[in-house]
Length: 546
Image 1: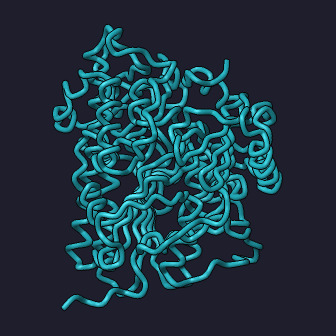
Image 2 (image 1 turned 180 degrees about the vertical axis):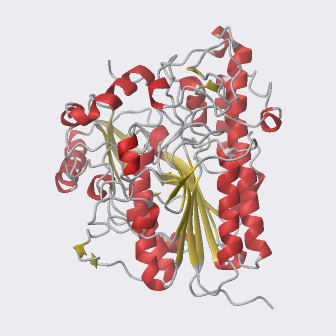
Image 3 (image 1 turned 180 degrees about the horizontal axis):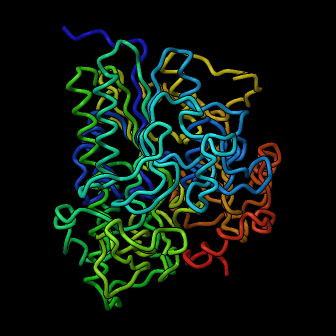
């Protein structure tokens, strides 16, 4: 006889970093992800789940159930002295951890934080950790934390690493950040899993965010796998997605991006194969760690009492990393004192700690199969994520859910599953009403349809989705209109044919922006605080308007 399910489930929310829609096996990929595939086969996969196009805004929305500008992080972690662009979580929001603690939850976090001000560019900022402008996880409701306060960096010598509130240094010759995240998450389960008290754990990998750093044993599995090139890879993944029913066969594969090039014209094919092999190895190693996390649940006989969810924070990353283009923001040497070569340099083999590369636009185009565009942008390629939910006994295995949902929906969904309520005040501060909607009914197999549109604005790129209609623009361009029921790959712009619908949706977007602390991107770029980011963006993003 099966044990009765706990009335308050444990919840583990796992997030990858800069991983595209088609980069795991159960979403069409050739990359070996047996643990995620097993979660998908025994749970539910969403075909239309949305992030917020970039790491910091996605994390702010996920943590708070608010659009990122309302939480104070409308852009990145720079403070532009505007309410929606402070670069840290404000006091008019609560995190999932803060919402769950009154319901008796132990709250745990592992990995990348990156919603508490800048901890990379200034030692002064690092020294102010814990102040209102530099909140750490333990300052925002988490009982335990092991991970990094900043964004991406070396996997072998990680910057801004913390154990709870204590700054620590990477230790050991075998330090590899992805493995350490998995170890810490498994360790927390070993420590708190046997308790009668439920726990919430947020696990934020930096994989497969650049730099291309992976372990040789993982890279070896993928050498020469990508010599077929990105054009063939996109075709292969598209066919797999159609066959799996995650995509509607009416949705054509988008053409190769205009800023890519035909594989047949590539002269350094072995080097390109090597870059994609390292990227695949990073995802493979993350999946191995997720397997260890699931094994820890089974060891303590709590898998049935645990809702596990997985997503990516944005689409595949097309940033090119010009030579020395990010050197100013990272260490000049490895921890062993060897110089680091920065940039996508074709005569260097990627993967080791002495290199610092990205996989670049053409491979990102394959990661985002079948969609257009990438991280930063709010066309489908920038905001579509694989999303898996696994909860034995509650979620029927093998389902595909086609209802649109988004990162703003996590907080209301999780507090719904926990049987608690969203606060109107917290620590003496009025709390914004939540923007998201609980998709718990969709997890458990009931009909669910969101009531409100989903809105986006990031770096001037704007979109609104209402039912199957999506209005979208790439800054500083015009509005485009798509009927996603027949054209989710956004190939047939209906804006000229449907001016009334454009006016309706653009009006909704304008009203939302006005009430959500959204500012014009030109105004943000003119802020003194934006200068370092603007320089970096123009040097490393091939699609940024010059």
